[in-house]
Length: 310
Image (tube, rainbow, N blue to C red; front, side, top):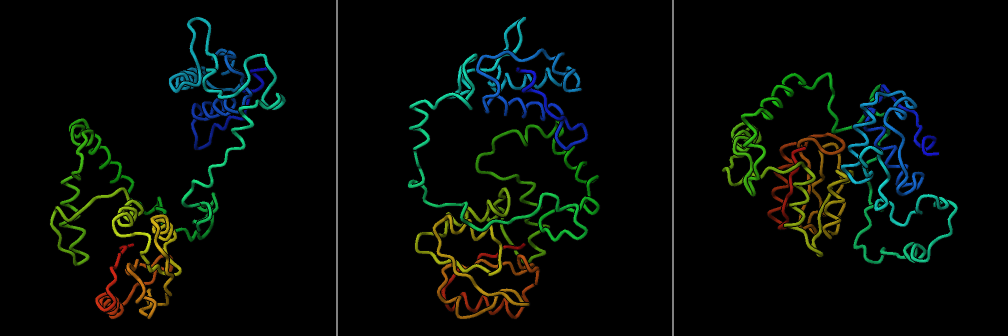
């Protein structure tokens, strides 16, 4: 019974390793109730033969799941499903969850509705959607993805080896609290920002985890319940979602062949989010005269510009 539930098609040439495939299948079988609480698992040799994988693959998968609490190892006996991982599941030998009558406390749990506590419903926001096999398209118009044929893989691997070397362990393993990497800050200050015409001190530079992390911090600092944020339309969807989650009132602003249109809609904005270098998603570049016009409008109407150098 247990062996039948553990047989699944193993993909030897897939992106996911054999051990990871086995671990995921075992976890699914436990959480779905196909493996009853405290039930024994097949020996590593037997399961390896059934799946056509090495015994070491099964042993490592069992050990990993034991470390994570899904399995309980018993010396000279084998591995057993941890009953604590099956919250509300039936005990070994009892009817499966598919046929057992619902318990009274389970029925009450199913009736609980926490939707009234939600302040925002992210599922109702606009999100980027792309097919899983986009890389196989002849012309995949997907932004933010690196082309392996153009990416300097050899140089990147060399830098990674240096950064993760034994000599550098003390630097990257310590908790520097509120200090960014001084070498990275210096590279940004002396090599990146001057190309954008920006002069900055070290204490004026903040390293974030990425653009969305930076926008989240900006939103927390500048946006309240009555803040109106002007967003390019069409524009960066994730920026719109981040500002909306912070409580901002979103004001769509038109875009043409020169990027953001400098018009009357700017007057009612407290903040204006703009991508002048490569407008998202059209990639057009805002001409210099329009940039000057945007700065003039900011001074005239009193709004703050959030420039995303996309």
